[in-house]
Image (cartoon, rainbow, N blue to C red; front, side, top):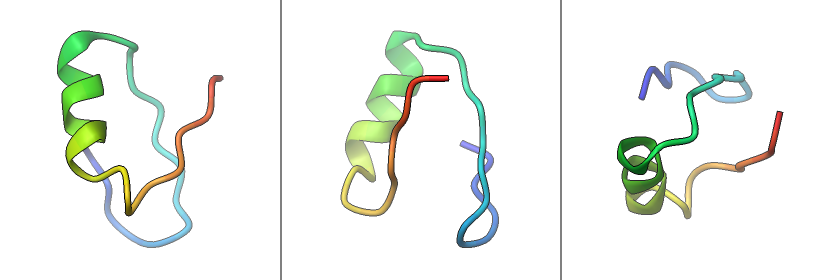
Length: 34
């Protein structure tokens, strides 16, 4: 997913693969619409 350090922002496309990755780490990340 390209997550490196805490408090950093990463923009990713909204597709099924990205949503699956987010679902696996949803307790660690904050998701916002760009």
